[in-house]
Length: 428
Ligand SMILES: Cc1cc2nc3c(=O)[nH]c(=O)nc-3n(C[C@H](O)[C@H](O)[C@H](O)COP(=O)(O)OP(=O)(O)OC[C@H]3O[C@@H](n4cnc5c(N)ncnc54)[C@H](O)[C@@H]3O)c2cc1C
Image (cartoon, rainbow, N blue to C red; front, top):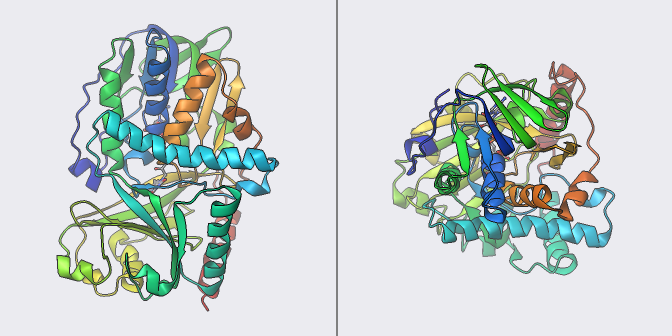
């Protein structure tokens, strides 16, 4: 399948030459899924051992899934609360460091490989309600004191105005390390580097239908081709379908929406944005937006747990634009698109091993742009030898979603509506 239309596809700067797999091959490691998890894993595997024969199989195009449609917010931390899990204080610190290392590693790759992807540092996490404001103060305190992370600071409403102002927000956390990138260009930039290596092959339009695992893994494509590999890594995320039913039961694919506004005059933008910056708020169904390097407004928000789209996506996002950036809703979006986020019950990534030959990573719960790079690095190290971070992720307790991953249950839709309602009722 071709890329679905979106801002990133219209503005992509890289083309990676790939083919469809039409023969049967052997390799050391076969990666299923050509999003940021799969491409990063292949990139680091090749760096660690350039002799490994690596094959990436992508059903559609590189970055076709969430990796090429997201909000472009390069963030640390996880979507869920990892301190409520079974980790010791020291392990919690390691998990936190993993996420900030992820942001730094993405920036290192951009610099080392000279990837043109509009990196801009600076992120505001904005409080909508008084209780968010209290939460934010505690969060900054936790980062500064428990995790010894000093790139985040609390900003009062007045202080926030040096970066951004909106009648909708009370205060914010400013983080100087987080920021934004053009996610598809980053993904394609990594893939392009990979495609220069003789030992790595990326195949697009190559759908894996099933696999069998004994001493080796035999991967079968829907056109009859096969790949036999010593190891396999499943990086299919929200699009895994029936390829592995156990993994599918641990995630719920949820739709979210993004609009790109490319014709808002600078003086209108300047009423809100003092600089090009990334903003996300603290609502359960959050709004996330940024002013990019070309002064385009990329505005994301809304979710559909039932996967039924609003009748008019652009108009439905504009309800939030009107509240946060009043006046800007009168401008027409250049394009509006949707994508599937894979959420887990605890909103923590689901990463582990199925057997000695098969690893997997999925379920970043809308917070995967930065961490996928670091997860790829970790999986590559695990395949090559061992990596201690891997055990930390395996300790997260993941529950199945009800409905066996087949019916994404009306009960869940109801439960999520409760949280949406809580957002509405919590305004003080
Ligand atoms: C609209 C949207 C906004 C988001 N905003 C942000 C954000 O601002 N910041 C942030 O940190 N995160 C964000 N996210 C989440 C982030 O994009 C994801 O966590 C991340 O891209 C996951 O990467 P991935 O490689 O694991 O999955 P994907 O990018 O979804 O890749 C999975 C790939 O597997 C392929 N595949 C599936 N099954 C098969 C098969 N059988 N055979 C071959 N290939 C297969 C698919 O075609 C797909 O390309 C957002 C997500 C969405 C959808």
